[in-house]
Image 1 (cartoon, rainbow, N blue to C red):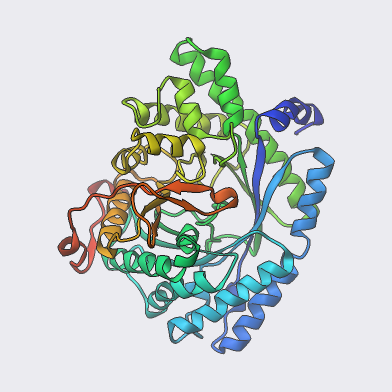
Image 2 (cartoon, rainbow, N blue to C red):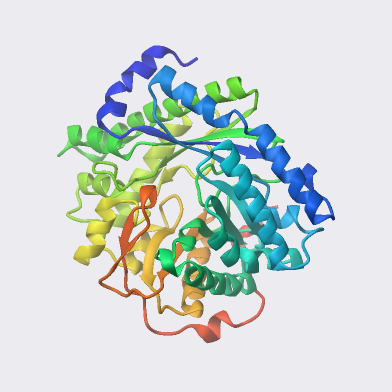
Length: 454
């Protein structure tokens, strides 16, 4: 049982240390909406989302008021749209109509984002999968609240390099389609390896086909809380450091568990998971980079950064799993450059490079996240970066992701402005040597030998 004493214990964290529930995400299965008639499919999708999510925002606001816990976002994730539209959509433009329907439904119920404009192609692609992926640039340029993702690899199947090559082209095309907004569309597009079915965080959220008809997943975040706690153990050994992180993660996760339970009860929808991810914002004092610096780094990117991040990620998970019976999603530490003032400062100073960020993704929650790169970067280079990150996830049996933003018309030394939680980012240099011959090979990279566990 969670009692009000536990809630009151967190008042200081909420008031002064940027503790919040980052999102209540309502997962909605659209499997029963499928139809071979596109108009009927769109009608079914709209009606189910509006009916199921009609009380989501108001319920979240009620919980905020009653418990004094900020809930920053209310979001929806749906069954991957490539599956839903397979029978009705004969071309990419058909899928765009579903994107517009999802956007309209999201606006009607008042959520911030709706995720699941997605395709799962870790081994190969159907024609429907390919059509959805090709529709992404137009879908993201013509909607406001749609988030898209493509899973192109897994430890069990390897890496679908045909999909990687196509995704590199679509990232580039999405950047061009939203060039008037600093290529903002790419901030809503994630390429995954080993994507989880229950992730509440955007832009990669979708509802897996093994999930219930509807489910409540909660994402909770508190980088500022962890940073403040670590200030009390300056100069102490690793044992005290790790214990402090674990205890703090436990308290933060209990807040998420409380909110998830209340939302589940009030909406009469099953509770899924709590995702404890240290997800930063541009706000001062809400930075994963500052945690790493508190651990002992002069700047993120210095020698020792990967080890410090590995320690942080592991202790967050250990604390979180003791606080809830159902911890899932990604859970750990995010390192999105544009959303973390400490990361931004490190890039500006030259302490943090793309190559160092890639090394850090071996041990963090996700991957190369919200990184602005020169607008002239070729599609093949983007595909090569995606392939590298997918290989890290495949070999290490973990989720990795890429959210790159080639900012059209801007180069190293300039800044891209995305606004809100997405923040801003300095353009980071990219290796100028090519990989076109490599990414243009057909087929897939085989799964690693340790994937055979049956």
